[in-house]
Image 1: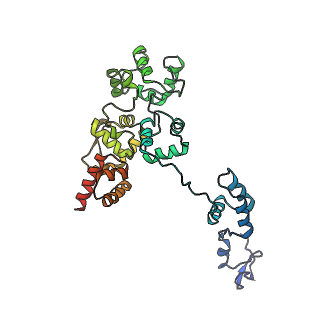
Image 2: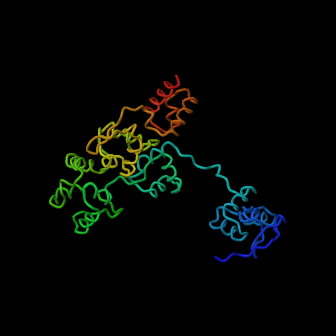
Image 3: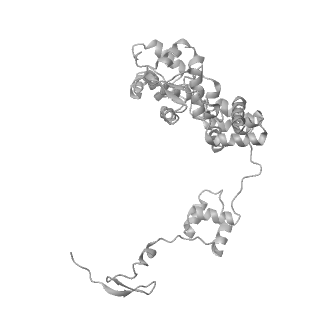
Length: 344
């Protein structure tokens, strides 16, 4: 190993002496400080203020990026500076509020029709409709008919096998959205009995399809006719609450059956079952049942905090509490009774 020659040198920052190599400029104490990155500050100078006042307009697509590139600032710094100068456009005062009829329209048609159709019927933008559906916790997933993946799961086959059936003309897709009608599934079951295997199909789904085999019974295959309305796409109903209502009405079920009832992914159902072992109890054969839990266990911790504030605000009036939390009045009454009982 070759030893480097060191000489006595003077630090350029503090002026102290230290031992260093030929290219050393700073002492060991000052060297780490020099390596620290200094946060850049974006100061509003007069030329930048004048430029923003003349050209800033958030309604013009790409204008923020154009100004940011011109003054060598990030986009967020340009927006923050414009907000300080009062150039940002606030929400319009005539902004439309969502009415009860519009919310009922979303609850009726979400999942059956696309967001484009909903926005056109309501006279609103796609972003407005999408955000409202998310706040109401209404699923946008289509529930009319079968997707190819869902049909393959019902028949217990791979999706490529189902694709081969479609290619041979045994199953026909809808031209509008590429889904499979319930009536088409029923026709396939009756006319091509040797194509699928009875030991592979989902038994509960298959029996329900044959016993209730008219068009009305198979039009929405993912929601059981025995499932209560509050466990479906109800505003304010979390997945945990819907799973509790499903198990209450249908008894012990497997994760795949719960996912079909609630129109959610099976992985999400399995995750909720394993996470809330104090609510859901495993049985033999892959079945799960509901433990004896209070009504408040159906809701998230955030909604329970809102519920306590609503009870304090409205004095236990169930209609007002239900309106605040966007939940059914029956659920609000049970929550109020539990909250007031625990307080007492």
